[in-house]
Amino acid sequence: MSTLAHVFEAAGLSTIVLASMREVAEKMQPPRALFCDFPLGRPLGRPSDAAFQRGVLEQAFGLLTASAPVLGRHPETIESEEMPIACAIPPRENPSLPPAVDEAKALRNAYDRALQRRGVTSVGRAIDADQVPDALGVFDSWAAGASWKEVPLPGKNTVAVSHDIRAYYSEAALELATGPEPGGRAVEAWFHTETEAGKTVMAARAALQAQEAPFPFWFYMAPAHR
Amino acid sequence: MRNYGATQAVPEFEGPAFTPLTKPLSEARVAIVTSAALHRPDQERYTQTDTRFRAFDRDDRDLIMGHWSPNFDHTGFQLDLNVVYPIDRLRELAADGVIGDAAPRHFAFAGNQPETVSELRLDTGPACALELVADAVDVVLLTPV
Image (cartoon, rainbow over all chains, first blue to last red; front, side):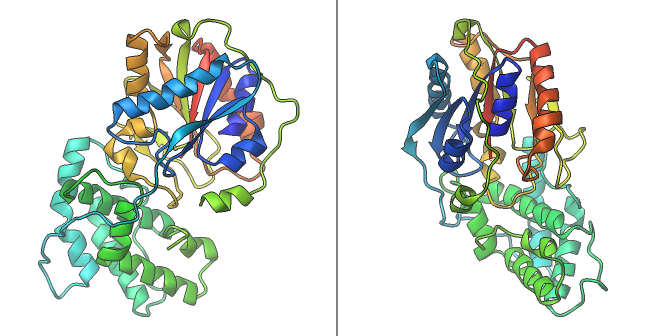
């Protein structure tokens, strides 16, 4: 972002960066930056809070009066929410399937409702929603010892498929969750600690590592801190 | 992730350009450029090493976050795209006369760029700047994820 700020200023545009990493902004010195200590992925701080978002923008635009490079700071800190959301998963239908496969099928109605409501989905980078259970089935087989070279994955790209599984689950979860709107990482925490799919992705990731698959194939299947 | 980011080498710019805003904010046209890899469903998806940008209309709301990193929250955007791309807030600030108007087009790049960011500095960044200038944009708000 700071790189683009320099490029745009050189082209005669006035820029303001909402900086999420203070040290990077200090080193790169974009002409105007407002450091916002908010969860990564939420540069305006709070979803569905128009007044808060407007306040961030007004502070950012306030930097335009400075006559020299300026690094401001938003006064509030918003912590990431590490507690999983409260989300009851619909009951399984077919106990003969691997748990993650059955679980993904049971979430389909909630996923479809989310898609209908939002009109768009993030699922589809490598596989569509129909293929999510199949992909989890392959991950499950890798975790059980099958070779990733011999049992092909629908969508092929492990990182993109993992993204699609995560997106499918989080879109469904936001339909099913009760309680306040989830903070940053609350859905991620739910996926990794409370779903069979989360466990299966991590098990497949460990299996790829053990089978000496190339590092980028498995490392980026989950957040680095997991 | 923040701790990791703080240790990364970054490009340094000597004697950077500084363009003051020469008109009142209430007359300025504002565009958003985000590194969240946003795209419309009908636009080409971002690759893992994509240095290009996508443009969309200020009325587009059916946007997808195509960023490849699993290391930041994606659910805020699912709940309310304004937490990443505050287009509705810009429209409100324009309606209230705080800014002149929201530009007709807004732009997205993918935040995960090659370390040297050479393409961004020398090719796709300047190309995006030309588009912004063509739209008579005065102020660019850059939002990361």
